[in-house]
Length: 625
Image (cartoon, rainbow, N blue to C red):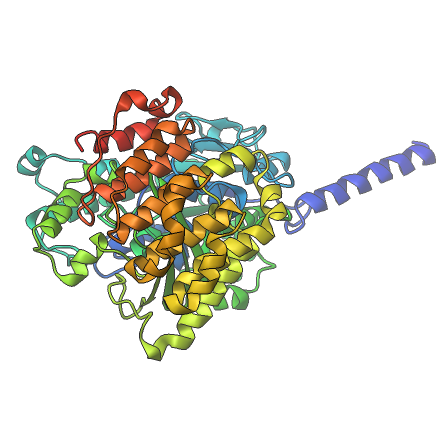
């Protein structure tokens, strides 16, 4: 071979080695391929029902077997308490309210931020075989090149010989729908779990129905664990346990009443275990079988998988890797903070944000008059929800059990160690003033910093933002910051807030007016000094939602019936998301808190609105009213 050809071959080899190092910087070059990675996700499981994480839970021996040869993550959190929003955070590594993926169910899908792809695409580019069996449920446009296969038949076994794989199993047996049993089922089916073998959480009534529901749910978790065992066995038969990281985690919190759909620990705090394969123990600088107490959030999963695969984490992800040889255990263990968000759940709107730091949890209810128990059709298919509300209506519940159906405080602070089910609000206790202020400031820094798109109503985002949500947020960051500051006037006493609220009510910016009216509704009758300004807005404000919000304030303050203003706005809307927000206010006004009566004439609703599936859910509830 000539010297020139040798030089050419040497250059080609050098280029190959540099490229390989760029893709797999953490693996031993030319000695080993990167590890296989398998995810096992179970639907609708918080950590509270697995004995591995909580004394009130049941044994899950197969998940426990993963922990014996791996790591237990004692404080792992979903960033959202519902499937599509949680999974959107997982697949992107990004906070939903920053990228427009915060609403469940999606009315439109949003694009990925320009600089990012769904993380399996990076694995696939690096040579991984990527498969998903089979749930996706993203609020984001998937794009090309994410999965080699995503279907009920997808399996790692179809890869090329010696090709590393990333595979996702989704176990649906414990999904919320599994608790949609009937009273007849209760008589016919005896649960495997004994109905007196556990404690009922303190905010629930201790009734036969709640005990049966708890037992059935625990049965579903037992079955889920058996399915985990089947997957582990399949990997073992294939000889993959020594070269495959196996992650098990719940896809968000549980489905007993007040969990899924709410920013309480039962809706967010998930079980997580990672099996560490013998061949790749050098990628994890921790003793096998140990427990990790640092906080892990779903936005951290994508960068962690990429890091374990030796792929550089792209800029633009909000999460941080928590496993890999270059990860500081001290940094992971000292991380004690997680953020979460709740917006629309099917037809029910809310706007709640939360931060947990250490043992303290701060929840910010931006529209506290929208009480937790406001009708959400799918939730109320569960008999336990129905009984809970019926007992409340009868006045048969304790104060703690009734809180779900009461107007919330704008701020809530809980000591999770002492009060794991968040029943004692410490926000007004002077002893916790410094903690409250610290967490409030952290949350404000977060929502302003994203910035949080939800300070615009969803229909505005659909029209103006969802072509490029991140760019819209960047362009309107100053305005969003102003809306947040107006919303926070509700944390003052009314006298201190009055002048700023008056200025906002008279602003030329419709969304400054919008947030000022919402704050006044939070104050209720205490804000009657500005009623002369808000009153005319109910009929004259050029923005339809402001007319609705003004009528809502007057109704909450017991000054006027909102039905004429709200139904007129409903009939005038041709935007399903705008009409749905109006219907949310109507549902609130018809609740037992206010008992206003509405005569909704379906033929007056625009065809585009009336045929929307979420609007139909709300109209189904409101039809008899």
